[in-house]
Length: 306
Image (cartoon, rainbow, N blue to C red; front, top):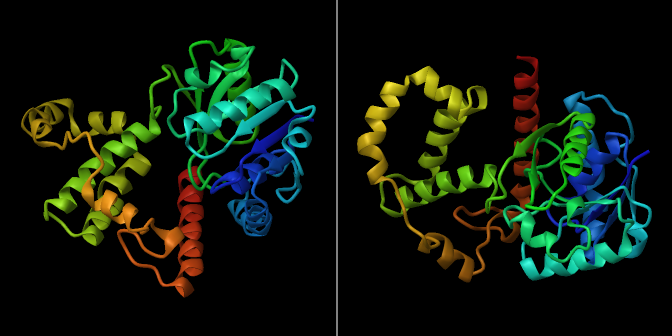
C-alpha cells in the first residue's frame, strides 16, 4: 500500500487527505498548528459524506487519516509527501530542506503550491529529480483535476509516477509541460479575475451582476466546452475579428487593484473574516458552504454522466 503524508493542513489539507485515503492510500497528516489539526479532523466527516454522494468507487475509508504528532512521524517510510504549507517561498524551502533529510531517497516530494515554480523548490533537495508539482484545486475533494508540474530537474519517472497515481485515485491529471509561475489553471483564472475586477472598478457592472454574467454565461459554457474547443465552435474567423479590436481594450494592469488592496489592509479577507467584496452573516456561513458543496456535487455528477 502506498504511504502518503500531507504536510500542512490549511484550507485544503483535510480534503486532499480524505481523497487519498478513499483512494486506498495509507495517509498521515501533519500541521505545526494544533488548531489546524483539530479543524481538519472536524472537517473529515462532512468531506467523507460528500465523497459518498458523488458515488465514486471507494478503495479505502476517507476517514482513515492518521494525524501525526511531528513531521518526522508523518513522513517516516512515506512513498509520497505532499507539501501544503502557506504560499511563502522561504517557508516552503525550509520545509523541503527538512523533508530532504527526513525521507528516503526514493520518496516523491510533491508541492501543492498555487504558482511558485517547482524549479525553485528543487534547489534545496539533494535529489531534485524526485520533486514534482501536484496542484489541487479548491475544494480538492470535489474538483477532480490536478496539475502535474515538472521542474527543470524533475525526472520523467517521477512525473509519470505522479500521473499514474492521480489516475489510480480516479482523478484527472493534467501535465503542465513548462514550469511557468502560476502553472495553467491559475494563469487563466487570474486573467479572468483581473478583467472582472477592472470592470467592477470602472463602474461597468456591479459585483453581483458580474458573478451572474460569468457563472451563467462563460462559466456555464466552459463547463461543457473548453476554451480551445469553444474557439472551433464559435469559429476562428469570429475570434480573429473580435480579438482584433477587443484585445487592445482588455486590462493589462500589473498591480493589485485597490478594490482588493484596500479591503485586505482593512482585514476584510472574505469568508474567513465575514466580509470581503460581499458581507456574510456568521449564521449563514455554514449553509452557504453546504449549498455550494451540493452544487459542486450536482455539476460534477452531471458532467461525468454526460
